[in-house]
Amino acid sequence: MTQPKLKEFFHKDTSTMTYIVWCEATKKCAIIDSVLDYDPHAGRTSTHLADDIIAFINEHNLSAQWILETHIHADHLTAASHLKKRLNAKTAIGERIKEVLDFWVPLYNIQKDTPSNGVQFDHLFQNGETFKIGNLNASVIHTPGHTPACVSYHIEDSLFVGDSIFMPNLGTARVDFPGGSAETLYQSIQALFTLPDGTKIFVGHIYPKPDEPVVFETSIKEQKQKNIMLNSTTSLEDYRAKREARDKTLGVPRLLLPSLQVNLRAGNPGDPESNGTHYIKIPLNKI
Image (tube, rainbow, N blue to C red):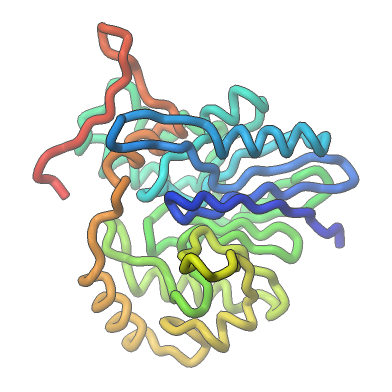
């Protein structure tokens, strides 16, 4: 087995983990769940983290093949469009993105610049589809429940799960977004639990306290033993009750409305208006 190399980036403002995964022999790499910096008060974007990723790739003589999304994020804007322009890599997401587009595109009324068939992404992965990152073997595991389009990327002995499951002390993703389901997420995580115990899990978000280290890696074994919300002994009924009770205490993510419309377009802000300016639309009284 060719072991993947990995570099993590923690975006403190959105508590997001971005990963570069590469094949040492070929120097081919993939970027998973990138972040575009966004100041909602000023309405300004910047590319600080994305440019750090580009710098790392250049410094290590890597060549980007893929810009991968685990799902359409509701808590940060993706930097996929910026990275694609700079690195000439393919963007990809799970094929059920079409279900997410069907809900959100009409809500924003952005049909004119947001295709509903997903062609804004270079590739839509089917469940079980395999692909390569250099010599690394990768496959796609459909893990819906948080959203219908969530996928996990299984790259050799490493699993990149996005928001589906967090570090054991935090539990799992919320399921109260459109198309979310506690039962569906339960079944998705049960499928992940069939992977070898030694499989490394890299989570999409962490929430350390100021004096705590940034810990983003766990394992199938640790999750089965210690996840506070869903472990190997948790019944569907118990999980549903805990998850739905927890979701009732959660507010709307701070960047949900700005991030979704950009992420639906693979990081593109959409067409400018007649004055040449791009705008973020906020639908009133719809969430």
